[in-house]
Each structure stands twice: as C-alpha cells, then as structure tokens.
Image 1 (cartoon, rainbow, N blue to C red):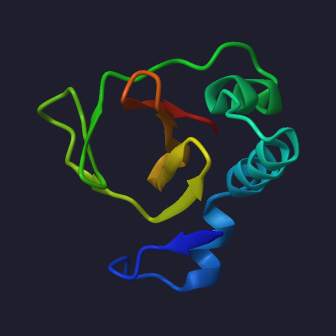
Image 2 (cartoon, rainbow, N blue to C red; image 1 turned 180 degrees about the vertical axis):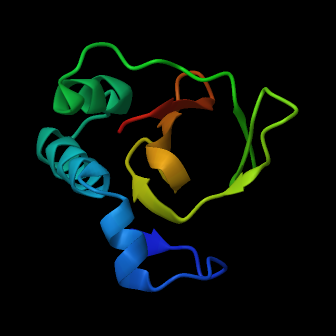
Length: 114
C-alpha cells in the first residue's frame, strides 16, 4: 500500500497525482511476486513497464529515507511516498525520481522515470 510522507506539506491528492503510474506499477509488481511465490527483480519489472529502454542508475544514495545527491549543488530530498514490496521499500521523490530496493545488492537502484 502506498504511504504518503506526513512531513510533506502538500495536499495528498496532489502528491498522488505527481507520482503518475509509478505506484501502480509497484502495486502490480507486488501482485505478481505474490502470485509467483518468489522474489522477482523489481528493477527489471519497472524497466519493462517503463518501455523506453534501460533505466539509468543515478550515483545518489539513500540516507535513511532521504535522497543524497552525488553533486554538492543538489539539495537533499525527502521522500514524498513509500511502498513496501516483497523486495523491500520503494521510495518516491519529486521529479519522478524513484529508489527501487535491490536486496541482493543491499542497496537501492535510484533512477528517474518521467
């Protein structure tokens, strides 16, 4: 289930609309993982749903639930929403940036899907 960050000062419907299809694709991934009773590759699944070729991996990192950019001039970003999946928690950020859990790597694949 999609969980909105209560610390974000914006109407809930605006936040949900700003996320576009991404939460729906994550929801569908969860349903597929449940049906198959196994771990599925969330990055691969989201790449297929996106349909515009390979996703570009950002060098940004997560510090808790905050996105820390590799570039000094970029401000840290607080997540606007999250979604728990069989692979871990997905974090959604402004500008269609998404952090996809990779349990086998013990990190998140951070990309932009706009």
